[in-house]
Length: 548
Image 1 (cartoon, one colour):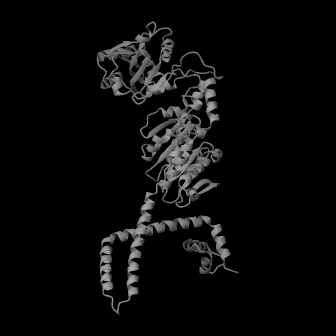
Image 2 (cartoon, one colour):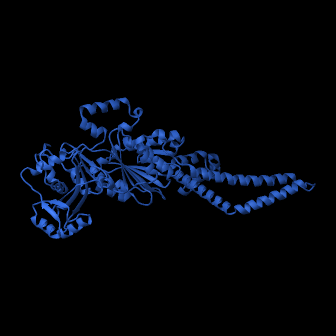
Image 3 (cartoon, helix red, strand yellow):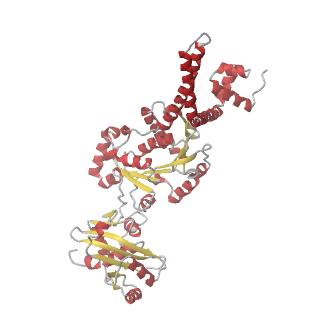
């Protein structure tokens, strides 16, 4: 009976077989039956993969070393070849009885063969370096062209892809992630959803689809991938790169991920991001995963939630330099991809339920019925625009802590009934003297009228002492309700979210309260409305006029 094979002997058998690719030769080498060798190979596919990967890496390293050494002796080789060829030509021209023609031919053949081999190795190296995989134009909706270019140029770290149904954002990620892995052999990817049991039929299937789509343009690409569902992962065979799939309902499984040696998780995809437990959960995951490399890309895909209070919509409104927000909807998707039946249903919903259509199909924040300001436009207000604002209005809502001191500067286009809010100051625990100094640094002068909350006569008195031109707001019965309705009735309230982040947040998130049954409670909530109040005070002379 043959002695039982040790683990070391099995590894030696696998390594030898990978080198010679001959089952019977391997059996003879180790004095074993071919059937035994076959069982070893079939049983230990993991070791076989590891050895094959190391062999490939060693071969590439050897090729690089050979090319490097050949390149160092390039001038010497050329000189030697020229000398040898000259001498051989002299010998050919003076062939005598002592000359062996066969030896001359052999020598010349060796010279040509070695130089051809060098050219072949150089060509292989160049082809390997030039092989870059790209999503073909036929696979990409027009809405994603600029986004795709920004990703390739690493313009940002975070890519927030929001929109409505059939906007193709998930399809784009499903093909982009395999493309990124193909071009970055040290990267692995992690695809995340809230619930683990939803992974297989969503992100896992989407990535598999993306690999198959790329295979149409790059035949054989899909053959280099192995697909497993337990544990759920996709492996690129030639490099060992992994695509992991995890749910946030089991954070321990995310923290325990260990990429192959020399690799790191460079890509994270949060699918159905609006269903994740919140930004704190996201930050903890990113902190535990993003490490070990210098090149990272994060994808966040979601259908826009209706409520402006949803954490995704609130977070999206916060300006962040390394974040790119991208919006798409079904109208930019090729008709043959989404089908006429989908388009017909969308148009029917547009006619019968316009609010639902705007949210579900166009991917817009529509609110849940309690929004006060439906006329908001959050965008940059340029210096060029501001230079044409002829009459400005300034307001202050006093505060200390936790309520902030809130100041705003704005312009009202009466003809177009459009309000532009382009400057703010928010701070806590700051003295009146300090806030006045801060306002002067913003360009406020002693001749600029400021309308402030009249409930704090002392603060108004302090400002007058400093030289400010300030007056208290003329409050009265019904003034809050009237001014709020007036603001909500304007054609547009344009707020620059970079210049005025606090103001943008307050106006965006301000909603009427509801009782336990979901019914709207009459009246405007007196909370989280400090900049809103500053705006009301500033415009008091306008909204109090009849007809305005």
